[in-house]
Amino acid sequence: MKFSNRLENLLEEHNLTQRKLSTELHIAPSTLNGYLRKNREPDYDTLIKISKYFNVSTDYILGVTNIRNPYNHGECFDDKEEELLGIYRELMPKEQEYLIKQAHIYRHDGLDFLTTSKKHGST
Image 1 (cartoon, rainbow, N blue to C red):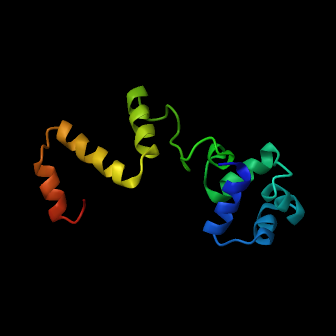
Image 2: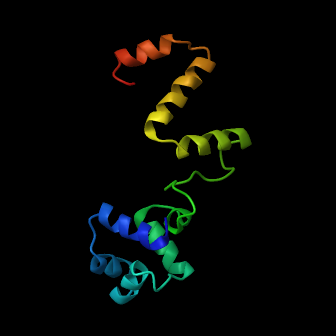
Image 3: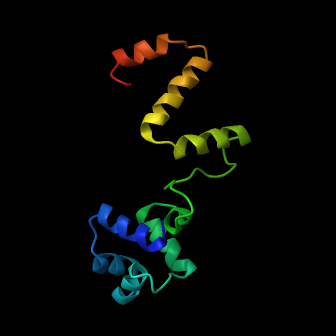
């Protein structure tokens, strides 16, 4: 997905008009319109403003990743944990549930976890 599409989707998700966002970011409405029409690209400072405004990464806005809010690289995890978290975040919600269930089985919770979680309302 390209920058212009991501920006348009974020506007729709947040129920924002172009005028409102341009006012919030202190950029000309025509500039924002140029981003959406694909005939302009933001400078680095504006790209950062947009990502902070929507609380998403610049990589997400640029279409490099589908992960909106990546974790801080190397801050709390070793390489294997980062790999696992990255895989988890790329999965669809149902697949994420399956991965969690599988992890409980590997942790030796066995199938007891699966029946207990159903009793408590999770799937």
